[in-house]
Image 1 (cartoon, helix red, strand yellow):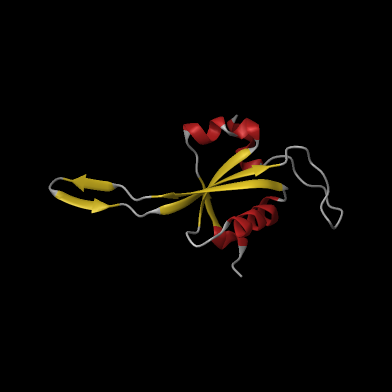
Image 2 (spheres, rainbow, N blue to C red):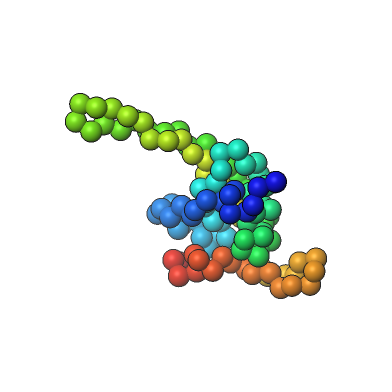
Length: 107
């Protein structure tokens, strides 16, 4: 099994993703071979939150052009993770967070 840091690669910060923050939806770039269960487990371990839903999107690479030369950007996978905003406790009795601390100052 992969480490959580190998599944969730980095946050995606766009205008649309910041509009989803008050609803408890956080957007991440994830490994292309990760499934929804692995993404949910990685988010729970990394950020100590309760994940209620995971939506994934395969983003196709775009064709780029510099002068007369054309190329293509890499395709990647995006995950929108919905968390429970009311903090509770996990199985070991630790208190869960109601949000992800990295995103707190953005909305």
